[in-house]
Image 1 (cartoon, rainbow, N blue to C red):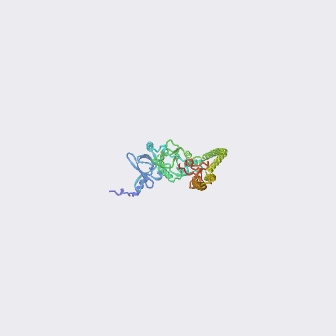
Image 2: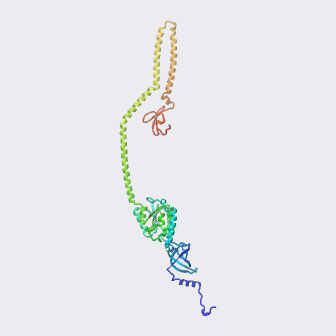
Length: 449
């Protein structure tokens, strides 16, 4: 039981918490080395985790703003050196180490993890040259994924526009350093592919130490580059170590200036090439036109030389054909037969008259003229009917008679020769067709031998 003189006013909980907080104020800007465990990200982007060694453990806390500035985000099992301050959260009665800066303690272990990632990606064929996408000869526009401030974006834009003044440039601002950088780069790559506003991507940074380049040695960035449908050119600055992004990218440049020259040709060079090709094409066309003109003139001279002889030959052939047709004409043949019959009749009449004169004294002689007249009339009738029959056959078998029955005579339009076989002509050859009445000019569309 307390004596009255020993009695004192008790602290309220708030007073005690504030007293503890005041006592901890000197514990600022401390460096603590330890292993990370239980890393968790809160809804507002803050991180809570434990920092431990072999014997003890303290709770750590990293605000979202500080998380965006740190070089890399700790993972469970990694050892770091943390800078921060000790704080007592009065509302929770919790002691926390508030971290504002993180540095690697074991670079060798980090490099070992990086080499393991490289081996994994190489086994998948991610570094194979045949997987690389070709860069477009002349892109519609170039997408720049880099920090929106600093010399890198300025150098890229200046180089591209100097080479091709009206080239389209689409800027996707990304974080190139800090814990949030890998996801920032990956999201920008996916957005660039979705929007399809450019034909090639330049992923750029102004160099840095191994720790500062950690964002480009992460699997999340490597996967985003591999998934890209657009070719990706890396320009991460002067560094002795090639990053994973360099290895999986489609082209690697040391500086932003080199990348700008790699993705965009010089417009002045293209114009000069087009002009030279235009001159060569014009020269070739003139030469070809000259050669064709000479060839046509030569053919024309040869044609003029052979044309008179060809015309004479055709006229002679036509004359002979006309004479042959005239000789074989049914009308001429009938006329010749009629003349032959008239000649025979005159000779018969003459012979009958002579015989009649010799036999006028006898009865037989008196009757002979009648018999002779009947015989002559009968023979003349037979001859007349035979002549008519032959005339009908001649008319039917004559060219005009055959044509009148629906047949036709086809001649080659150029040579005038009669075409008696499909093999004697060809597609697109001009022909003349003689019908029972009139003639036709035509062109062969199909040949069936």
